[in-house]
Image (cartoon, rainbow, N blue to C red):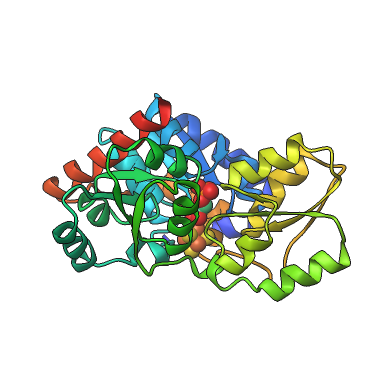
Length: 316
Ligand code: 13P
Ligand code: SF4
């Protein structure tokens, strides 16, 4: 085993890419990657996208195996939606801290208080949290889905920042919030964004809704990673200030090689997403290890319903 790992480590990048291609055919595998992983993993992925695109794509593929270069909740969602497929995670420890940031008590308390409550759960959550909820959303479809729910009262979990953003966009509903957040976006410094704004006057600020409210107030556009990428792709501007994780730079530059993208001085990097690597992809494909398991039946079934509901409501 150790010998095999060493063999992978000493391969050149081209050899690693060739090996991955060969293993994908042998194992009937497809590689899905989130925009926050490293450039070299995005380069070899069959599909790159935001959380919504990737979860939808996972339901459309015919391959036996999905290698998910992302974090646990993404692989887990892919498995819940495709229980018959093998889902392999390049690194089992790549987890999203926000995915655990809500307790059952918060949900029970809100359900006891409001008869017509809908518990809306950001996809960045564990299967257990999804199983306590009514519908899942991602940053790409949260506003649309919440707007169309018949319920007046919404408990938004786990992300307080996305929750407050959705509440602002859907003023006709009443929201209960939870105190979860993404450390990368929550602790991004508004002062560093302001510094960029004064260094590059007039340049638009594009921000992910997981950012703290101080940053969102500075933003000209707020949207998911795909939203930010599409905004710059379709804009005539040549410079942009980007408030999200730096991994998006790969796709931003690919689509707009003529444009400049500025990130905060403290580099916004998701350490968990960065755990994915070419070596680990070879290792899991070769050895079939790091298989995502389905959660216990009761949790799995309920969690899948929230994802199914998201896919159905987002498509309307
Ligand atoms: P989206 O790619 O769905 O915008 O969300 C980003 C994210 O935080 C994934 O962790
Ligand atoms: Fe989680 Fe934040 Fe990393 Fe996204 S960027 S996976 S929300 S820690």
